[in-house]
Length: 152
Length: 152
Image (cartoon, rainbow over all chains, first blue to last red; front, side, top):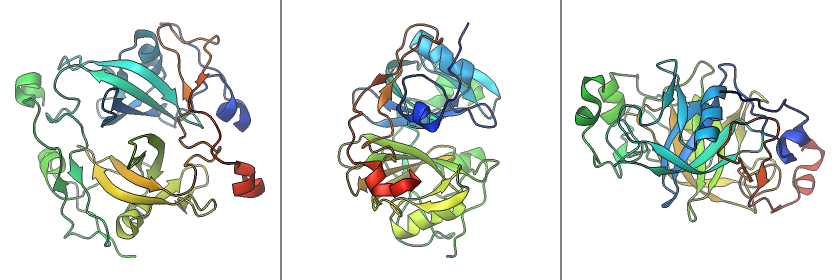
C-alpha cells in the first residue's frame, strides 16, 4: 500500500497549512482518539503508526498499532467490532488524530464495555493509596470470553 | 505535594479494580484527552507525568507535561484559559485519562481556535502528496499574538 505523508515544514506550515505531515514520536506513533460519531461518546484512545494511519485513511476503517503486541491491528479483526470512520481530524501540531466512528457491535473495549473509560477518578485531594476509582457506565455490553475466547 | 499511585497489579486488578495504577510510558507520561464538559467537543490531546496527574486530581484544574518544552505546565498559565475539571476518568489499561472540562476563555488551542482539531483528513484513497486537509470549525476564537505576545 503506497503512502507518502508530507515532510514536516515550519510551525506555521504544520499548524495552518493543508498538508498532512504527522509528527510520529520516537516509537513511530501518533495518538488516536476514537469517539462515537452519533453520540460523541469517547470510546477509546490508541496509537497509529504510519501504516495504520494510511490504511485507516484509505479504507475508512480503523487500524491501530498495538504497543503491547508490537503489531498492526485492524480494530475488530478478532471481535468483529469494526469501527467505520465517519470523519478524521488532525490536531494543530499533527501528533494526534481524532476519528468519529460508527462502532459495529456492542462495544469498543476488550473488557466488554462500550467505552474504555468506565471508571472515574475522585477529585479534590492529593492522590494516595486511599483513592478509590468509581465505576461509571461500567455495565458489560458483551462477554469478552465469548467474543475473544481464551485470548482475553 | 505528596502523592502515591498504586502499584501496577495483575491485568484483572488494573482493568477491573478500583485502584489508580497508571501505566506511564518510557518517558513517564500518560495521554490525556480533554473534552468540553457541556458540549462534549474534543478540545485537545496532551500528556501528563505523575506530578501533572496528581496536581490535576488535587486542584481540579488541568496540569500537563509539555513534551516540547520538557516541563510541567498549568493549562492557562500564560493565556488565562484555565480548564476546570468536572470529571476525570481512566481507561481500561490505565495509560490514558479523559477529563471533561469547563474551558475558561474563548479557546483551548494555542493557535487561537476553540479546539485543536480544526482540520479534516479526506478519506477513501491512499494518502500521497496530493492529499489536502480541509479546514473545519477553524475560525479563530482569539488572537494568539494578543494572548501570548511574542511567545506564540
